[in-house]
Amino acid sequence: MAEINTVSVIGMGYIGLPTCAILASRGLDVIGIDVNPTVVEKVGRGEIHIVEPDLDGLIQKVVANGKLKAFTEPQPADAFIIAVPTPIDEDHKPDLSYIFAAGRSIAPVLKQGDLVVLESTSPVGTTRQLEKQLAGLRPDLKFPSAFGEDAEVMVAYSPERVLPGKVLAELINNDRSVGGLSVASSHRAVELYSRFVGGDLFMTSAESAELVKLTENAFRDVNIAFANELAAVCQHLGLNVWEVIELANKHPRVNILQPGPGVGGHCIAVDPYFIIDAAPEHTRLMRSSRRINSDRPFTVVRDIEALLEPGKTQTIACLGLSFKPNIDDLRESPAVEVVKLLTELPDARILACEPNTRALPAELTDLGVELRDALTAIDEADIVVLLVDHRQFALIDPEALGDKKLVDTRGLWTWAKAKRPDARIEGRKAREERERGHPLRRASDRDAA
Ligand code: SAJ
Image (cartoon, rainbow, N blue to C red; front, side, top):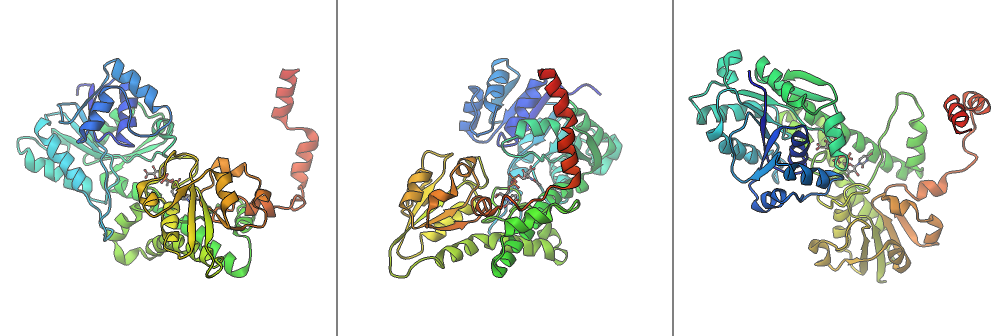
């Protein structure tokens, strides 16, 4: 079979656009497709519409050298990568309409020998449903479910697993599962990903690959829920949860995550529902983890409410709005949810500080929330609420808070303040190593000398 030369990526969002950039940088001719004409125009000019380190330079380069072209309508290609959103509706049911819209749009340009890869996070069975849709629209072509290894169009699922903020590096370095609807489909998809993936590629079925992706994010959700449950237990017992976790994590086989005001972003708080929806009877742990994590903003607000003095107007400074530290993404952020809930309290004036944005979103200004820098917000506040452990906040000396009331949802200041310098007694191993001097340190010292 001929080499894959042209790849069409459907959806130029947080995953699709970096994938376009990497494929084009490896010499493939890349066609980026998006239904949003503004995105297409922007990418066509070599610009980007998302925030991701180093992506702007790479896109500029591959557009300038003609390797990446952007369109609103699908064009013929040797391989198609579908990277469109898969949200959930109000009832937490997966909405696959973007995938099937993508399927409808590429069906007319498919030809013998083509590969279609679904990358969007999807419930088990979606790749096969997509194939069924394509086979229905193109009865002139042979697909794997009906024709097995004799199929003319190959279909596979291969999920992304990159961390926002490190997308380009993780696209290249992470291992990847590749699940074809036939062996030939898996091999063809491996051939495509080998062009840029430096990690290992693992072949499996499409269904297993679909569940692998969901499992990764559900695993993290359950583990964050454990940390959040532990936070509630420690609060009840009057103990410091961050100290308990830090010490428990000294066990060689324990690795507890960090509690916080809830789980944000578009993946971890969503993907468990895809498993829950498929097997409601068998997902008690995942369901209660979801509940624990989505209740967290309410718990934080109750803690703040308990500090308010009735009948007196008080200023609450909320530090951090993004869904996790050191990014500017406020979507699905538990910190924003906390701030919104606080505006419902009578006699409370709400200040917010987010070092990674210049302006507050309208949904907050409309509720009367005012933007301040961190020190001004602290200065004006009666109650300080730390919602995101941004690196800027770690630089603030907790002593600067004086006797202001503090709700520290991330333990950034409370644990730093509580840490006793004499709490660690150096073990024999560490002492001997220190006395000997670290071998690597000695070598570099020699080099420096
Ligand atoms: N969080 C905690 N405590 C922790 C860790 C995270 O409360 O100990 C919170 C964060 O504050 C944030 C949320 O969880 O609100 C999610 O943040 P995250 O950094 O755990 O994950 P995301 O959503 O940025 O990216 C995840 C990653 N999945 C896993 O780590 C299993 C990433 O690799 C996936 O590619 C991405 O979801 C995705 O696209 O599915």
